[in-house]
Image 1 (cartoon, rainbow, N blue to C red):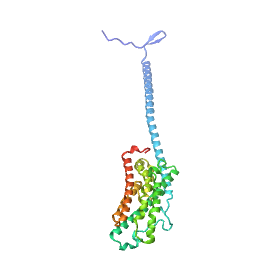
Image 2 (cartoon, rainbow, N blue to C red):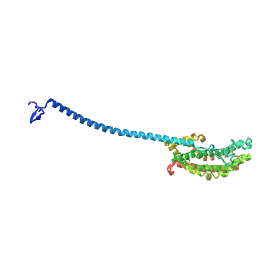
Image 3 (cartoon, rainbow, N blue to C red):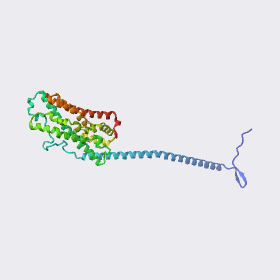
Image 4 (cartoon, helix red, strand yellow):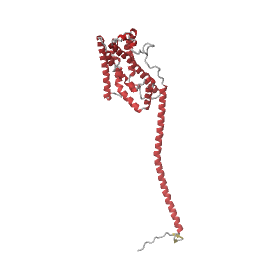
Length: 335
C-alpha cells in the first residue's frame, strides 16, 4: 500500500471549495505563532511576578530585623550615655572618713602606739609585742569602719541615685550588701563604747594599752554583732547575683567600673567589698590571740582567754552559716 495522501485545507467560496493560497497559509501560521508566544509570555510573567513577591518577603523581613537591631543598639547606647552622665554628675562627699566624738580629732589617729605610750622605749620585747597587738586591734577597727563608710556613702549612694533617674532598679543595695548599714552601726557603737574609751585613757595618761578595758565589749560579741548572722546568710547569694549581673547587664557593668575606678574608692573591687565584713569578724580571735601570746600577767591571761573563746564561738557560728548556704543553696528562700 502506498503512503496516505494528506488532505489540504480548502476554502469555500460561493458554494465551491477552493485550495488556500500560500499567502493565506503563511498568515495563519504567523497568527498561531503569535498567539503561542503571547501565552508563553503571560505564563512566564506570572511566574516571574510570583518569584519576585516570594523573594521580596524575606528581604523585607530582613530589612525590618536589621532596622530594629539598629534602633535597639542606638537606644542602648543612649541609655548607657545617660547612665554615665548621671554617675559623673553624682556628688561624692570630699571626705568619706567617719568622724567620731570630738570634731577636731574625729578622723585622725596616731601613726603608731609609740606616739602616745610614754614608756615604750623601756619596755621588754614581749611587752612591746603586746602593745603592738592591741594597737592593731584599734587601728584596723577604724580602717574597717572607714571602708564601710565608702560602701555606704559612695557605692550604695551612687546606686540609689541611679534608681532616682530610672537606672538599675532591678539591682537593690540589699542584693549587693544585704544589711550592711546595720553592720556599720554596730561597729561605730563598738568603737564609741569600747575602743575609744581605751584610746582616750592612753592619750590622757601615757600609760600602756590595758587589755582588760576591752573585756566587757568583747564578751558581748554575740549580741553586739548579731547583724552578721543575716549578712553571712545572704553573702553567697549576693556574690552569685553580682556575678550574673556582671555577665549580662551592661548598665551594671558600667556602674561597677565607675565605682572601682573612683579615686575615693581606694582601689577596692566590688567583690572585695562584699566579703570584707566576713573577713573582719573572723579576724577578732586572731587579734586577741596575738595579745594573749605576749601577755605575762596571769589575770590578764585569764581575761584574754575568755575574750578569745567568746570571739571564736561567735565567728565559728557565722562560719557555719556561710557553709550551710554554700553547700545547701536550696535552703535559702527567695535567692
